[in-house]
Length: 465
Image (cartoon, rainbow, N blue to C red; front, side, top):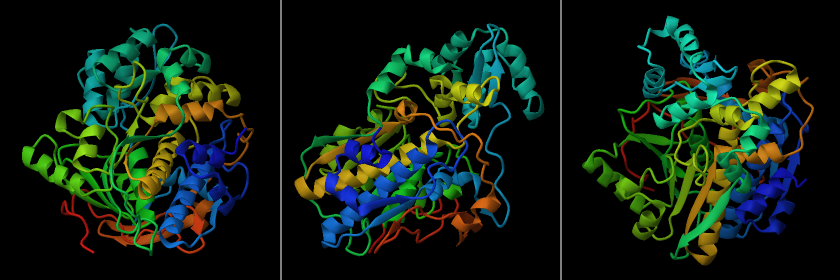
């Protein structure tokens, strides 16, 4: 099998000779799993870091060496688990209604209810009045026994709730969506249209002066924006004040960024956002395919508004197949696609055993960053606007197609075991201790120049510098 970094670099369209400047060190495996999560982490982080160094070389003529430690990359793939604020871990992000529930046909269905509207929709499908946090799990568990797993999954999807039935790998690959995901590469970089050639970076940082609009939430998209910020990009994260965020994850994924409130449903706010997009280099969004078309923010429309833009799109299940418009999260994709069941079988336990990290989220984030930087490089050489896209299901399919590993016996790294990989930042929300940026470059190593403030605490403007 091809080395993961080589595979991802090739999918992005990177030049093969650049791989000579990338070195990956450390243990083959750092997390307990039968899946090559460590290889995914090192390959995604390594190829992304190489892309940053190549942008710097393209602008300055100075080549750098890029080095990635597999253990560091694997720990960064679960960075949210190691965050502390003023010495204390954040509150548990999982809603009491989230979890795995037995169905009447002997199946198992996972509900993902970490946003209030997803919880209310799931309860609505089940015909339950919300009994409160203390009782909700037991009440749901009783109600799901009246359903067959496939029917409940379909009803949840129809109601735009978030749920998935537990499948085997073979069952997933027999579905149209499983086949669609398996047929796609983990990462796609596609030319959208014409645009001028434009240099990238400011000569001091690989992405210095590059403007990134980050319209994403939770993990995968924010990880991408965080990665771009670590190489000097001006990243502005945008969200509506009325929409919930997972506050326990937000600080970790927002290092290096500013954030503002703009609501696409408010015409004046949409006009401000469109103005920002007109001056952006990168438009990063994590909505379902075509969800932003109604606001004039489709890839084609933004390429017309801002020739040369890099439009990066993330989804749960991909842009192709009958589930392309379905809501989803990392753990749901693991459940639906057979990853969870295979992990449980290997460990000799019933039900599901998820990956030791939200690896599909983090992998998608790093791969989007890779694709964006390669697209910026191609824009500098040949011009054009570019579409970069991936999905959690595509990353999951890539991982599933890799040879299995035997690392279930490894200890699950606790915070004390990774203390050497952590650093501190003082921020308006407290002292943050978190996993430091992955990767070393011989000249312009990654760093975050600012820690996040409260969500929405910045003005919707670009840095003036």
